[in-house]
Image 1 (spheres, helix red, strand yellow):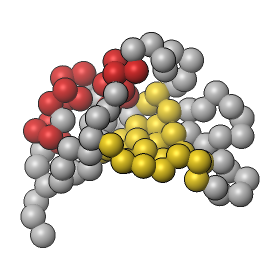
Image 2 (cartoon, one colour):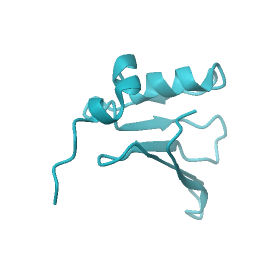
Image 3 (cartoon, one colour):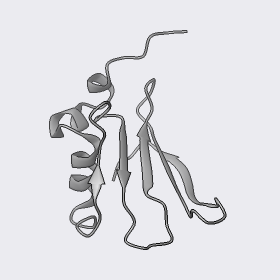
Amino acid sequence: MSTPPDPAVLYPDVAARGSLAAALRAAADGRLDAALAASPDSGPLLRESVASTLPHREPLRITASTHERRWSIRGGEPFQGSRLIDGNTDDLA
């Protein structure tokens, strides 16, 4: 198994912003102003959670791949554990 590259190499635009939360906010061009976006201190370039403005939705989770430039996006509802959003993209915007 190969060692993954430094996240700053795969995601130089995210590293330049300091966190995935900041990069996503910039890519969203104001569309996330009502939502709280936060990247954990332990992996600010690789993980982010965006709180929902609706009480019956779990936070949207964005996770960066460690081996290729790709993001996984997941979101659901807590009552039945249903996935409402589940996909991958190579374009953060």
